[in-house]
Amino acid sequence: MKATLPILLIIFCQSLAGQSSSGPNDAGTFSNNASVGTVAWTNQGNAITSNDNYALATVSLGLLGSANTNYLVATNYGFAIPGTAIITGIKVEIEKHYFITLGLLSSVTDNSVRLLKGGTIGGNNNALGAWPSSDAYSTYGGSADLWGRTWSAADINNSGFGVAISTHIAAGLAGLDMDALVDHIRITVYFNIPVPVKFVDMEGIQLKEKIKLHWSTATENGSRHFIAEKMLPGQNEWKAIDTIPAAGESNMIRHYTAFDESPGLNNLYRICQVDQDGKYTYSNTIRVAFDPAAYPLVKVYPNPAGEQVMISAAYPVTLLELTDFGGRLVRQIRLPGTNSQAVLMLDRLPNGIYNLLIGTKSHQYIQKLILEK
Image (cartoon, rainbow, N blue to C red; front, top):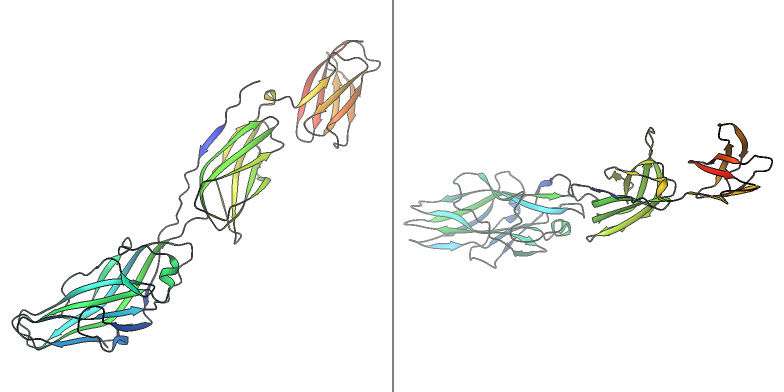
């Protein structure tokens, strides 16, 4: 039997769509959290928008005195990140400034700037440094900064997601009333949306009278099923040959198999992946050759034959034509194509060498037949 080598194609599919973002969003809930510092924030809700109305922390300090404020907590940002999103970064922007009465070498700086997850303050402290003396936005984190925590879309969408800010106020050589003022706090979230399926590989091999297609996926998100499609050279239309249910949700290697029951000599194949919402994407295309000599699709017996010959084919037979050595048609039978076996009577034919054409709906085969009576 002639060996048939598989054709293997590695499909380099990008597993993630381009980075997306949501926001900047404004908080819906503000509060004072006394888990750090001693100076409370008042009018916390004024930080909802940039309008020169301020959340305020104020303290009077003596020579070289200092104090930390409590956390000004802003939560309930109203995000609606898609459930399959992979969070890649979080950016917080705080519009703020300080005011000091008769300050000498006095300062207001960040003490702690952390995110809340499910209402709990934690993760990295992304404090920057000195506050400006007039309103300006300071940016904390960014498109690739997760603040030392792992995040799901549900974490971001939760009303307990937000940010907490504590400041350090130092009097220096002199300082009477010292104020930290926050005008606005907004958050932008960055994320990637995984494509529904990440293909790993695809191959097609001849398996007896069929072509076997095999493909693997590394991840699946919301996949419904796969459709194996074929197109023959010279055609302009892909035709479905098999439909295979998908895993739906998976983070492990999954293997799938489909069969082409009626391959041509040269075949193009691709896989159409259909999502739960009806959207679809395609794999790359592979070409698989079919070698009829590698598997006897037609059997003619007995050969040499006498008064009749039996034909057994892999597909229903539609036509039998017998020609003599000179190419003259001596027998012809047209069949309905409902049976893969047929009988051809050879009566009143002289001994000799003939060519027998066996036709099916998709193939034609020619077999040499010797007639000996």
